[in-house]
Image (cartoon, rainbow, N blue to C red; front, side):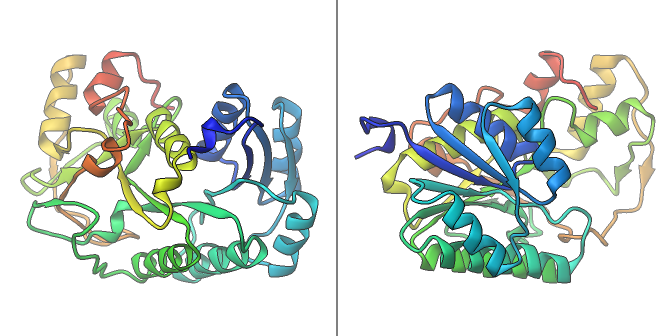
Amino acid sequence: MSRVDMVRPMRLLVIGAGYLGESFARHALAHAATVHALTASSESAAALAGRSAFSARACDVSDPVAVREAARQFPDPDIVLLAVSSGRGGAEVYRRIYAGGARNVTGAFPDVRVVYTSSTSVYAQLDGSWVDETSPTEPDRETGRVLLEAERIILNAGGTVARIAGIYGPGRSVLLRKFLAGEAVIEGDGSRWINQAHRDDIVGALWRLAAEETARGGIFNVCDDRPISQHECYAWLATYFQRALPPPAPPDYDRKRGWTHKRVSNARMRSLGWVPGFPSFFDAVEAGLDPG
């Protein structure tokens, strides 16, 4: 039975109520769910509580004692959304927040399905091919390997993994902001594929995954319908805003999650009935995307 078919409201615990998690919590409230949230600091918890209709408290997800205490404070949720962020940390922070957090959360909520926000960066393909949830995942960065470790912890506990493409949305778009600021460059020949998803479409996908019991134990790519090459992206923006094409530059192979060149399929996510409201990045720009 789908969770949304239950007579009582769904009870959700959102761990990591940042840009994505807070939006998910608001969406859940709008759909009559009961929502509690955990965030990394007492300052952010107070700010959340001050502007939101759901309770929020601070919890260090890397601390098993703190997570067990949170489980006592907010017992028996139907779903836990684990949407934590490493900030700008490297591999050690990733291990503490992602792998450690996954281990602590599944341990504190042993009978609750956890929906975990991973990343499509675990696909390390370099040949421009299409990838889906059955494709090899062999990241060449430790950060990517830690994300896979966290995924295994979640899946072994019967949870659900959402591999999310590059997140953009209201007040946040690195591509558009850099272009408008004159800071964008076209790396190499610009053929590298870019995979993205609008925040609101990601929230809709996570809600669908939380509601569908059939998603238990599964991996789902969350991205829009149309990967775009870097050159195509900036050429379109140059035409749309009537500005110059960004200059060429050497590729930046030293990305924190590695250099990849692949196109990510969202077919499995779509099979659950999810449809992105912004099928491509260009649709969002035409709708008035604020780059932040």
